[in-house]
Length: 264
Image (cartoon, helix red, strand yellow):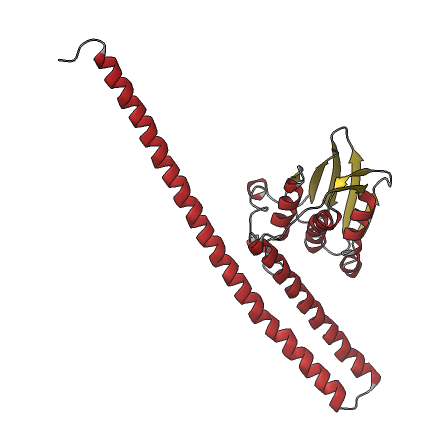
């Protein structure tokens, strides 16, 4: 028979064994889930690259046809202008696909390397805005900006500009013609807050936690160009600098993406 001292010791050992076993089982489950997630992401990535490669063929073929027609057949100036406008549209399509390929490769290779320096945020924001103004003008979207020129903080200009551009680009895509986009910057004690507000269709509360996932796209916007990695990249870039992004939105009421960058 077990004496009085041995019984509690056996019980403790059994409890310890149970706890260790439970943690090992849970660790195995987490590792399996992570592995499945990695396999799925790689499959999605391969499918995306294959899709982009296939889509590139169409604008290249169209450009070749337009170019051959302009070179070989005499035509009135008005007709030439029509062909050149068609060519411009195909070039825009190619540019979009190439940018998509570049962003995809950044995800796969992990080439985001930050070089934070004390510098004005105004110049970084201006560069990001400059990249979306043409598309905004095409849709007659009014863009207003309120950013004090004296706000200086440590940040990587290139990658922070990329993050802001991705958010602004989404705002242009999902705002109807004649809409508005407002950008305002506030300097707080520990953070600089950048609000990007659009008058677009808005995002339901149930989906707001999903929009920053890789390759996520809402079914309702399948006709809008995109591959679903812009917001994911934006969050990664801001997080790597000690900041974060918050979204406030409601269906039919537009969205506000708030970017918080640490002052230190």
